Image (tube, rainbow, N blue to C red; front, side):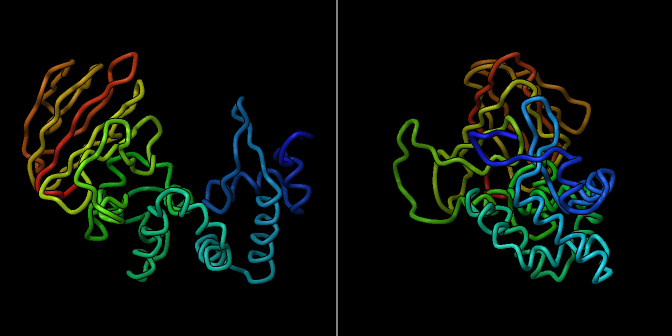
Length: 268
C-alpha cells in the first residue's frame, strides 16, 4: 500500500476484506463484475471503492441469489460512479448503456449477439474503453447508429474553423488509437486525423455504406481489403475505396503513424 496516495489492496487483501476467496475475485473479474486497476508490473490492485463493490456483489449473490448478469444490472442501477466515469469520456459508455436499456437488452444478450464477452461490454459501458474499432463499429451497427455519433461528434457547438492542434478527440476506446476531428458537426463527410501508436490496429475487419479516402502524413499503414488485398501505405500515399468492402488496418511502423481519413456519407 502507498502512504502517499489512495489505498490499494492486492488480491489476497481485497478477498479477505470482502469475505471471499482470491479465486472468487478472479471469477468475478472474468464475469465483468469488477475491474481492478493494475500496477506498473501488471499486478491487480483494488481500491477502497472496489472493495465496497465486492461486498455488494457478495451480498447480491448470497442474500438475493442473483446470477452474474442480474448482479451487473443491479450494480449499474445503484452505482453513480459509473455515470461519472462515462462523463469523463464524453459519454460514449453512457450512450451505449442507454441504447441497451432502451432496447430492453441485458449485457449478456448484447455481448452474445456481438460476439464479445459480457465483461468486455461492461467495462466499455463503465469506462468507454477496452474494445477495438471493429467491436465499436459492430455495436454502433447493432443499435442503428454510427461510431461518430456514439463518440459525440454531433454534440455541442459547431465551429466552421478548426485551428491546428485544437482538434477535439473521440474517447480512446482502443489503446494506441487517437481520432481527432478536423471538421465538426453533422456534415456530408466525416473528416478525421488518426494518430496510431506502434502496433495499433482495427482488431478485425468491418464494413459499412459509403466511400473512404485516406492520406498518410507520416509513418506506415497496412490496409487490407476483402481479406486478400494488401496495401502498404507510406508518407504521401493515398487510397480511395468503397466502404462496403471489408477493411482492416494496422500500424506496421516502429513509430507513430499519422493519417487523414475521410468517410462520406458519415456512416462510420
